[in-house]
Every structure is written in structure tokens, then in C-alpha cells.
Length: 441
Ligand SMILES: *[C@@H]1O[C@H](CO)[C@@H](O)[C@H](O)[C@H]1NC(C)=O
Ligand SMILES: *[C@@H]1O[C@H](CO)[C@@H](O)[C@H](O)[C@H]1NC(C)=O
Ligand SMILES: *[C@@H]1O[C@H](CO)[C@@H](O)[C@H](O)[C@H]1NC(C)=O
Ligand SMILES: *[C@@H]1O[C@H](CO)[C@@H](O)[C@H](O)[C@H]1NC(C)=O
Ligand SMILES: *[C@@H]1O[C@H](CO)[C@@H](O)[C@H](O)[C@H]1NC(C)=O
Ligand SMILES: *[C@@H]1O[C@H](CO)[C@@H](O)[C@H](O)[C@H]1NC(C)=O
Ligand SMILES: *[C@@H]1O[C@H](CO)[C@@H](O)[C@H](O)[C@H]1NC(C)=O
Image 1: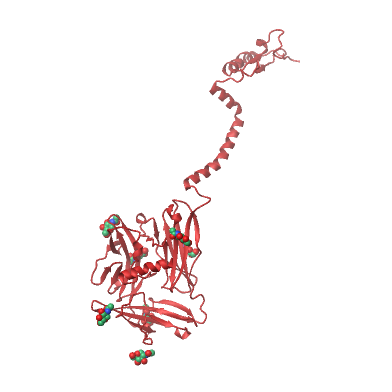
Image 2: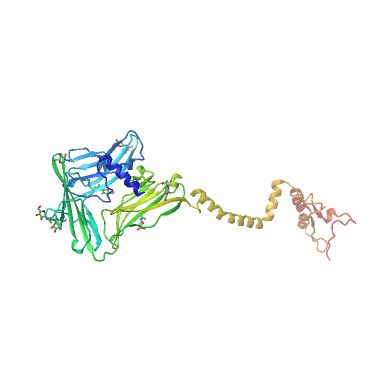
């Protein structure tokens, strides 16, 4: 993986004779030569024949196309400043356009700092490196590629340092006395004029520096359970130790290609994009963090390698994140939810139905008969379904009782519901024994 990245960077370098460094932050001093650039491999996934590249600067919330002047020159994947001025501070972006759609390849926030008139550096424009005494180390002058005629001068605490003119300042064995502020200055000639670029490193050599050289990605390779259509945010955080190293870069790769940068405009957001790098300080520890935002997980994403890379000091760390379908929640969310609701509701409904049946069993049977007009009583082999008795002999019944027993009851039960009643006075013929005779005492 690392090899591939370096290979891509190498291709870029050989095609343009200039290396595009991955920069975590962009602070630049006024009056110095500077450039913005993107790796050409970043636009590999827009495989179109005809396209245009546009550089924009944000002005009062609006993207304004950058017009080339003698001072600002766009060349291939570079936007050069000869030199940068204070008014160049702001937000920049570069887009790839195929005529129909514009894609943001990269965004930067450029911060142009004032030069310190009474010093060779600005103390807000330096990187700190903390090293252990007794180890070897080298300070690098700059990301800029240097031509044979560009001259390099090293200063320690603003005094010429040992007539050193190499790109790198090598220390075989560091001692505490090597601590200091090292500034290197490159002179670059361009169109007959000399421009310069400086880089300042604060070197702190300690007898026993705690985790000075720490550089690691928080967490390990992991598989995240997810589902198609779900939104996911992959977090990559790098621990940089006890000082903010400006040389560290942290970024995501999707199957070894750079993702697009998030635009921050919701309706314009690509389906997968990388959020801006953030620097964090928790206690006395320094971190950089970047989020990869996946709007909706697709089946294809399940087979991709999402790789987070952390680079500094020519060391590289990486973490591979893969997505896999969750075991517990294989179903799409709405089906899962509906299923759960039904599973909870069904027992309740069943209990309610049983309760209603028990409470209203008689009414239900009658209702059923009413609906089906069926008569189970006729075919059950019994001549009668019920015997009607009422007090008759002992105490003389009232007319209503007689009326009820002999007229109303038979009318309703026999005519409406098809029961066959045995009524003594009606059905028992003298001497017959089909109804059990019932009498008082
Ligand atoms: C640059 O963008 C950031 C948000 O990404 C915003 O906070 C800041 O104000 C912008 N700066 C300028 C100069 O527009
Ligand atoms: C893309 O950029 C071009 C040039 O700046 C602009 O004219 C056009 O409106 C943009 N198209 C979209 C879809 O944003
Ligand atoms: C500028 O240099 C002076 C003298 O060396 C120093 O006191 C001051 O802090 C410096 N300011 C910045 C912003 O570097
Ligand atoms: C370096 O300088 C020499 C002499 O001034 C010139 O001939 C040569 O073209 C220069 N090389 C570059 C790469 O600018
Ligand atoms: C640096 O160069 C000057 C003049 O060329 C010379 O006098 C001096 O001794 C050199 N210093 C070192 C440390 O080499
Ligand atoms: C990313 O992970 C780091 C370390 O685990 C954590 O401190 C940070 O808050 C996370 N960022 C987000 C946006 O969740
Ligand atoms: C993903 O990474 C693994 C190694 O962890 C590798 O074997 C595999 O080929 C990679 N897949 C893709 C699509 O790059």
C-alpha cells in the first residue's frame, strides 16, 4: 500500500518535475514563494476525455474563479504564488468539471502570516521536533523540489549555521546543545527575479523525551457491521505524541485511491467524501483526525478496503477498515422494524382475542348461527334441545309466566334459532314419557 502511494507520488513528480506534498496545514509567510497542489491520482476516478480544472477562492461565501496574473500561475496540478501576499489568505478549492457536473478535488485554508521584521522567522510559523539525546536525526529543509541553481542556507537561531548548504541537516548523535531554532532559506529564480521560501524547525533535544517520536493510528484494523443504505462515518485518528508535528499527514484511501473532499454543501456532497483534517489537543497529547463520510452504504462498499494512512518522518502507519453486513440486522431497517412491531403485537392480539371469546362466547355462537343460518341442533340426533318448566300446579302461575313459557320462549328459540323445546303442556301426550315429567313435590 505504501509502495503504491509512493509510486503515485513518483508518477506525479516525474510528470511535472515537481513533488506535491500532502500538507496537513498550510501556513505560509508573506513575500515567499508558495504553491497549492493536488495529487493527480486524486482525480483518477473521473475518467473523462474532456474536462477542465478550475481553481477557486472563496470570497464572502462565494466561489470566485482565480484569474491568472503574473503573480498567480496555474500549471497542471499546481497553483503557484510568486510570491504570496497577506491578501491571499482564505479558502481555496480546485474542481474538476466535465461540463455537466463539477467535482471538488481538494480544499485548503491558506493562512498567510506576517514576516517578523526583527527576526529571521515568525514564531507562529515553525514546527517542533522533540528528540532523544544520543539518537541520530536529520532536519529537512522543505517540501519544495530544488533545482541545481537554487541555493540553500541554514541558520541556527538566525545565525548562519556551519556554512551548511545541503537540503538536509544531519546529526549523527544528538546532544542537548543541538537544541535550537533552525531556519533554512531557499533562493529560487523565476523569470529573472529571485524569490525565497523559508522553513523553521524548533529542535528540542532531551535526555529522556517521553514518547517524543510517537506516531500511531488510534485503534486497529477493523470490520464494521453495517447494512446497505445506512449512513456510516469512519473515524481515523492519529496520535502524534506530545507536540504538534506539522510534518504529519493523515488521509483516507479507498482501494488505494483518494476519495473526494467533502464540500460542506449538503446537496452537492459526493456519495463518499473525506472531511477536513482536524487537529486536536487532549491534555498534553496531540492528535490529528479525519472522517470519511459514506452517505449510503452500497453493496460495492462491502468489498472495498478503506485505508487510513498516517505519515511523518518517512514512517507510515495504516489502518484498514472493512464494512460487512451485520448478523443481527441483515434486513433493511423498515422490514426489521415492522417485524419487531408485529412480533410484539401478535401475543397481545392473541390474548385479547382469547379474552373476548371467553367473555362473549354465547353471543359469538349466536352471532355465528345468525350469520351462517345453520342449525347444528337439528342434526344432533336428539329430539329436543331443552325442557321448559314453570311453576304451575303448586302456586297458580300468573298470566305473564304462562305467556312467556308457552309463547315468547318457543317463538324466539324455536323460530329464530332452531332449537327444539320440550314443553310439557304442548308436547307431552298423556301416557307419553319423552319429556321427563316434572312436578312439585
Ligand atoms: C474558510 O472556511 C471555514 C470553514 O471551512 C470558515 O470557518 C472560514 O470562515 C472560511 N474563511 C474565509 C476567509 O472565508
Ligand atoms: C461548474 O463550474 C462552471 C465554471 O465555474 C460553472 O459555470 C457551472 O455553473 C458549474 N456547474 C455546476 C453544475 O455547478
Ligand atoms: C518577532 O521577533 C521579535 C524579536 O526576535 C520577538 O520578540 C517576537 O516575539 C517575534 N514575533 C513573532 C510573531 O515571531
Ligand atoms: C543554472 O544556472 C546556469 C548558469 O547560470 C544556467 O545555464 C542553467 O540553465 C541553470 N539551470 C537551471 C535548472 O535553471
Ligand atoms: C563558513 O565560510 C566562511 C567563509 O567562506 C569561513 O570563513 C568560515 O570558516 C566557514 N565556517 C565554517 C564553520 O565552516
Ligand atoms: C474519532 O476518534 C477519536 C479517538 O477515538 C475520538 O477522540 C474522536 O472524538 C472521534 N471523532 C468523532 C467525530 O467521533
Ligand atoms: C484489501 O486488503 C487486503 C489485505 O488486507 C487484500 O488482500 C485485498 O486484495 C484488498 N482488496 C482490495 C479490493 O483492494
